[in-house]
Length: 476
Image (cartoon, rainbow, N blue to C red):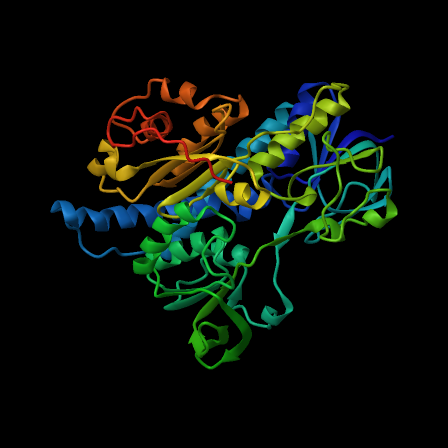
């Protein structure tokens, strides 16, 4: 074989797998369509969106200082400079990845690849860049080809004013009015960015609540805050038609809201779809399910002995950190580590809105659906000295606890920096910690992280800062 291991895709899962494989002595080649490593997450997703959300949050904090008697003038926004600063962040990170690949002697080929058979990839030029060879023979391949925005046919009109998340992150312009189709995390994060920059944002969501599937206790404080940030939020409403008009895009709504309105731009954020249909997998033994996801076992092996798969392309949750861990397991399996499996108890998820929402392990929504018995121990941030001092008392920290073993099953947090707090909760769930373990771990004061131990104390009936005598009230 020409190559020992080919990793198809240079995103967080792909480069994590490639770098570990190189460290373990494999001869590794990454094949990716992009000119830079990083994948969707770094180039058109997680990193640029969080950079822009940082700007949005900083602007909001300045506005909130008025309550403390500190006022600044209205902000002057230089969009070109903002775009340049975002690109600088991406360049720094992608350059670092290129150096890491070079140090590890990982070969990187920019090309579009399709499987000719279970041991051969056909390489095609991208943007006129010549490929070093038309075919690549390999012993093993790890597919890490990711996903792309899903755009239903009703929204596929020939106009640059209708954007997916990739186009929205380019910040071609800040429209006076923006329609966001979809109340999931992508729509809300990007809506928050554009609202901070001056757009009047309207969100339309088909279901009866924002962030469908997320814990309602966590969504409630965010939904309330978004009422003042966005022009409108229409729930149980569907966009049935988009039409190019003289002043922008005309959108027709049906459901709880029935009307036609015109917006300067429209962002379609209704989910993502795996890229499995672009790889020629029909020429291999790899099985793809009806949703387009590649079927894998707990060792990330596909039904083709020479091919493994990781990341978005193998199913939910579509998260970069999940992909990275899967990539490492897939490589360990190839290296002969028979005990290597991907069976996490908890995979954290974060919505980087303001306030942030984060959860890990079992959610209350999931517990109810599956009939799992649990108890809730919640601590409102209104009783947190730190939250009071920064004027953010809308937050909440809640544990789901097994009422028999008293092990923590899951955790949800809403509030500033929730994403930075959820790591501790994930460790507790992963290690099978008891709620007493969390309560008796000394946390620094005054901080937001101590709300994790305070919530655990609520379960035990030993909370100091709120009055919650211990009662037994298992749910499920």
